[in-house]
Length: 290
Image 1 (cartoon, helix red, strand yellow):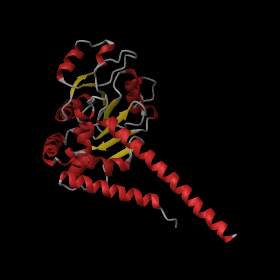
Image 2 (tube, rainbow, N blue to C red):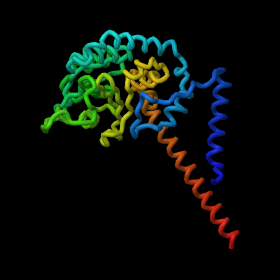
Image 3 (tube, helix red, strand yellow):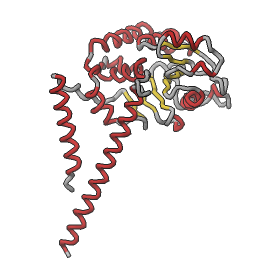
């Protein structure tokens, strides 16, 4: 087996970084969790999500604040549990999905036609209620989405988010992932939410055309397991603050995406360096034999 100095150095750097952050905050880093209720499909870096992100966010440790939202959603789920499968799409939105958006702090408008195609995402999300009211006065105009921070679409309970819903060519019968990609291209926002009540997905405009690039959370599985650590991913990725732009024009999701890309680049450079060193060791060995 080849000696891997690059890998060992990266591990040492991570340990030193963890030590520095522990000393700076006076607290240990969050316990790492295996994301069994979460599917990261070609969007972010698994390593960045599991090992780097929790350590960078001081809010990650605020169990009481996050737990209050978790408790509200658990109570909502318990109240609606026997009815979820019988609800049609609009009933599911009214009694389950919209309340969850409310718990996450969202300001949204429902069912506005996308001007370029006349197709309608179910939701347009805005940074605050004032902006929502201003957009409401521009319904039917291209300016409706100008200040929206995200769009969203909701489907019937546990409906497939990856398959066509009918045999026809109508847009309403197409793959929901294709529909959300269309909304991202027809409107201003770069991020979108797609849900069937149980599964909640995040899509990014730069990769949504692939249809298999998204970040998904099985909310019901998290609730059934009473898993607060996994719920933190739902809370931080789907709440209003995840979509709000900072002074540099980036939001939380942008930063996670960029952090994932940077980590993958660093990993690739490290692997390339290790391959070069391994080949050099082999070459030196052959020369020694000669």
